[in-house]
Amino acid sequence: MTGRMHKGWHGGRGGARGGPRGGWQQADLPDTGDLAAWLSGRLPDDLYTGAPDVTVDREEIVIIGDLAPVEGDYPDTDQGRAERAAAASGRIARFREDTREARIEVARQAEHRYQRKVAWGARIGDVEELFTTASVPVMTRLRQPERMVLDTLVDSGVARSRSDALAWAVRLVGRNADTWLADLREAMAKVDELRTQGPEG
Image 1 (cartoon, helix red, strand yellow):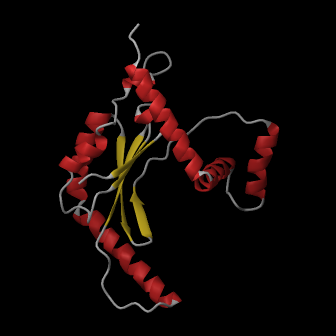
Image 2 (spheres, rainbow, N blue to C red):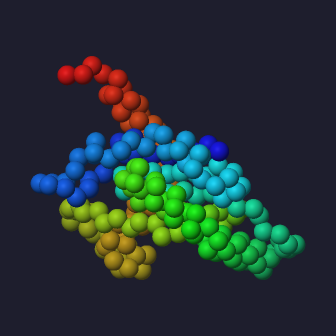
Image 3 (cartoon, rainbow, N blue to C red):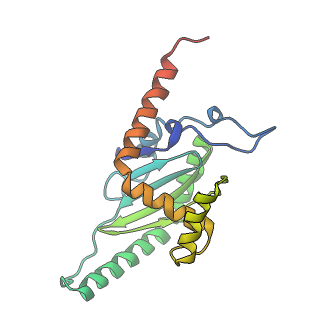
């Protein structure tokens, strides 16, 4: 079972962790190049219907897989689609409870091996739910024009706070620039690979 793995910045190795005088460097995090292969051998065969999607960044590994579709004759109406979505949500909730112990054990081993938290998710058709994903604070400095953008989102009711507005803006960029971000990550991964192949000083 080999899933698709999407890496975050710095080829999946980055991230600051608490440490002496400024924290650990990115190179202190274990490489995740073999993560998809490790999971293919470690995950129970019947956990998902196929290979899961695996996304990794500096702090977290997110594993999302497909479940068997819900059974039943749901008409192609607003009510029928709502009922199908509700059935799918219930199936995902049952999966979360039934597989909790197995997922905890896999997460424990993965967190020890890769030094990142593990989050899980499940998908049935268009219904996708994530379980206890990490919310990581990110500090930044913004000039007045940038702060005004956030305040406009807050004042208009789009966001509840500046931090919520910043998260909303990041999600918007991620959706609208998905191809460009994917190309950028691929280019960065190639640079990472070339760096490891260079002459040692």
